[in-house]
Image (tube, rainbow, N blue to C red):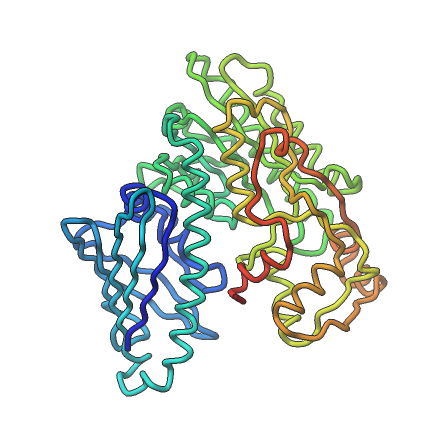
Amino acid sequence: MHFQNNCVVPFKRDTVVNWYFSSGAFLRLAPSFDNIKAPGLAPGVSEGMISSFLLGVGPMTFEWKSIHSVETNRNFTDEMLKGPFAKWKHHHQFIAEGDTTRLLDDVEWKGPFLPMFSPLFKGEVNGSLKRNFTYRLRRLNHDLGSHEKYKDQPRLKVGITGATGVIGTALSSFLSTGGHEVYHFVRKPTKKNQEIYWNPKTGEIDAEKMKQLDVVVHLAGENVAGKRWSTSFKKEVLDSRSLGTALIARTMASFGDGKNRQLVSASAIGIYSGGFLGEVCEAWEKAVEPALNQQNLKVTIARIGVVLTSKGGALKELTLPTLMGAGGKIGPGTQPISWISQDDVISALYELFMNPNANEPVYDLVSPKPIEQQELSGALAKVLKRPHWFTIPSFVIKAVFGQMGEEVLLSGQAVQPKGLHSLGFSFEFTQLEDLLKFELGRF
């Protein structure tokens, strides 16, 4: 069986090929709606390279292992060595057409499992490939466009805390494809050169290794909506943000070697809400104080809105109930949601340390079009072609989730990205339905 994809991107061949051969390209091209787990700092394509990842299909998980062969003109092939198909061979061809590049993808496959199953699965496999390549084209154009904007600036060494989280993983692979060196802060003994040990609870950090960084993007923190808010869990949430932030801030402030650096520290729009969420955000932001007003150290706080991605968070939690026909309002349904796509979060964070005009101390990372909760659930039901009739009364939310339910599920904030607008930032997604189709593969 064969599947072919033919498309054009408005970038020169060398730019496109270099992107594909970069570390992180595979993760950037892996659709959000496919259950794929791969190493966050995996190397880029090279001759004879064997790569592997885990692919989830329903309740089953398969290891997919493939080998790469590279032609002299840097077209390349990856061929499955182990996986759910009897055969899988993907040839990537890049054709220069002036200032644009034509991408020709040819996938030869047999199976799944046995060659005789090919006709049975032809429609499903080819339909999945069509969705995948539609996704890949938009993601490729987004990333190449974001990097093109700052192609003439020096490449940076960027350290990321919370690098294995949803945003951190995406940011790591995005930066790697742009030629930047990415370092992960880890809480276990380091095994790779691009890992930096730290332990916020004990105050330990590899300051010497950290000195080589140009930028630290601090994303680490306990998921505030992870469980009901007990007294012990509240302390855990507060400590996870304040201790780690203070450690990073103190360490960067102590260098004093004359090298210019920047700390981009995440916060959340919950700071506008009061209550425990407001308390957490205030403590989070206060913890950067040791780094303020230091020579050669720029500090930027990024207040992030509700990130809508099928990889985690609100959208992931809502998708399964909606697919089962239980989509609908939570409480009154009128609570505001200031949302943002995953791609816009990472390109906005990129903007904050690449744009020399990004000099405000705080930026709100949200889409310019806040919505109500019932708009989100209604749009999700529409995209998934499911009913939208269910309502969870407020008293049920309060009874089951307590204070967490009141502040996270029944409240919200309507925020505008004024700072990003002042920088001329261009959003990839401003229409909710457009984003949901992209994240869920409903093209």
